[in-house]
Image (cartoon, rainbow, N blue to C red; front, side):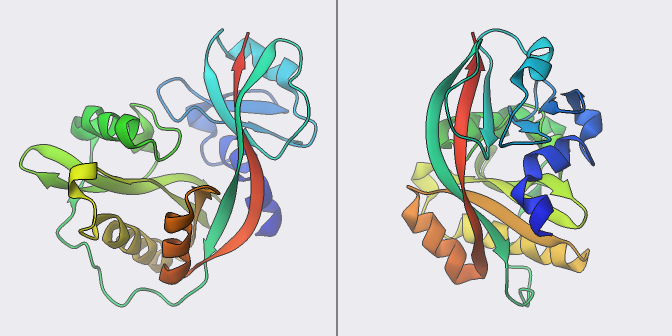
Length: 225
């Protein structure tokens, strides 16, 4: 599990999500419309030259696991660190979000709007196609959601967790995450997720729920010049 998690971007894009991606044997990206993420077979020596033919000028991508100067033709737009956390607790006893709505293609625009507002991480109009997503609505309006994105060999990421500011403090995100954890464990999958280092409150909340830190990794947003 460790070697997969340590380079989960690559193992997802070159494995189960290869049909949603493009690239080479050294570098791959999600196709346009999905989450703007890139992965490298060797993240300590990323082959950006191999990736360049599959990218357009000005596109921004998330990547992790490498440091140092940007290669020719690329620039680093943002750099931070994130915690990669794995579930390390018993299965939640009940589905705490049994009343949540399963999200489908008809909800894609609303999901993107909420993600653009709350910025839970890289998200695209087609991200809902990468796994099971659930949400809460206020009338016709999507106000909270969580779902699944990356995966490899029994590992399954929980992602896109966010709640509109006007509806925070009601436990929507916690209940949705608990629901997805339970579903994944029932499928014999190991839940994991990412949280930015400066998001201390959310990091502590996930620890209380049953996640533990697997590693802290450099995360960058890069773009082609």
